[in-house]
Image (tube, rainbow, N blue to C red; front, side, top):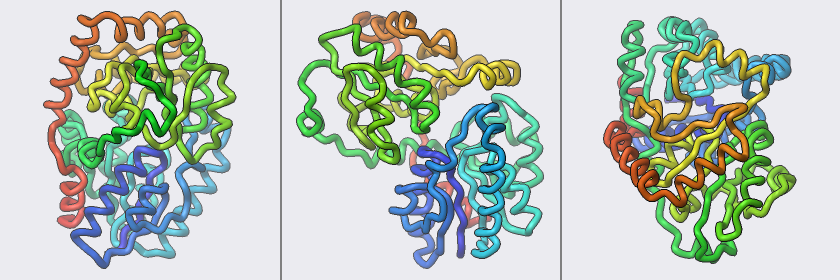
Length: 364
């Protein structure tokens, strides 16, 4: 069997890599190529385009880079045609991958979508697109199965792949020493995995580091970017690259850019405040389109506010300090958040998501 896989961001690369490892166990002679990153490459996928080149977020940013994006689509289509896969597997990254799904289905390829577009949050019309152009939808949250089946989509809940990734993690007892950290409490700063996010989020996080003297501030960096992207932010912090789980394993609290990292932080049972900021143009459009009350995965799974979300203008030094101090110094507040994490973990608690997803693809 031949598989062409497209993942357009860091979390997609991680989940696609675990899926490909499971496919390889079931089919040792499977051929896999596609778009992704280092983890997919380590899993045996021939990488034709690195996801770091694809990281455009927000309406204005996409419009501004539309010629580049269209060029990427044209390239992906050519590579798929040259490879002639049995299945095209699209991982998250909806704006790009749904366009690719339409083309691939019309060309006669089997199309699997793993980690569904958030049609339940906004642009429900995407569910109709999925119904037309996707043969199998593999979802990672229980409520997604209910939502997409209403549209008559062939949907399987396979569990959340973060459990698989975290299950592989082994605590490094020397992490602090190896990174020049002392025994002082650590606050983890997670500014995101895309260049645009880091540029929007990190400076305010860095401003926090000037407000406290008895805390170590450590930024979770991504090695696909030069350290200069991080150090140009003015503040007193360390940067560790590609060691987010090690960092979360020793953190007392975290400031986290909304995305997959919010759920990872919860699974490591680290109290957090969630933050997010984009261009005003993109925010104004999104505000009118988004149909959900929360944006963090933690609150979405819980269907209530478990972690505070500071979005756009609410993401200020004063507001972030206020919420962070509750997590650091108010034991009752902190313990309540941790208790609610337990309920979220129980809701998601299906393990072996990657193996389940691989089996579903073989059935198809």
